[in-house]
Length: 269
Image (cartoon, rainbow, N blue to C red; front, top):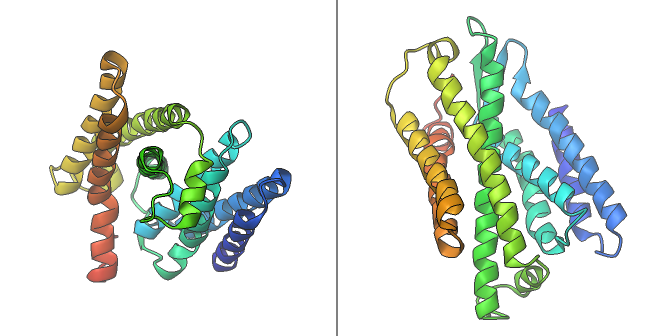
């Protein structure tokens, strides 16, 4: 069932990306319908009888699911047509990714009732910070476009999409909303991982590469928010911290899962 739902959501995302900007209501309807079906596909993929399914494809699909929701909400108040042609095709690709890379099953037997909550918060935190990183990349392209309009090194459709983006100050405000939400969720993930590590993971808390990189990413985002609050950080400093924090988090979780699942064909359960 989740396979059919995934391909149906992908089709609706693609249709939404081709709807003319003048027909906002139709585009919004396609996007929201795809988002709902995407949610159902994710639910059926992750939650199985007596186990939870996790993996790099599930995380990336969750990231795009959250990003579509943010886009849909923000597009009601802001002109985000330029983001549409960048986001919806990627969402269509990521919603079907778990069909080909389903990930690993983690048994719930012997686990505390906190385990599903811990996993859910973790997925949301990684997803939100993934959105922030994507947003930062778009801002870098937008800034470069302001200094060099109609950059010949970029496709014409990308230059056209960038021209329709909101002002950089508006984009920066959205970025910090995402980072703040992601940082709070990541803090809860780290805290629940420390407090419930033995119950959730079945092993004592240890300083492995995942723990160290997660804490380092948490510190980077924390320093960024402090620098923004007390030093008024903006521009390239903000974008550099955002991408560094995201890449560190990516290496901690998605990267290790990709290597194990795709390259080494090993189970993480």
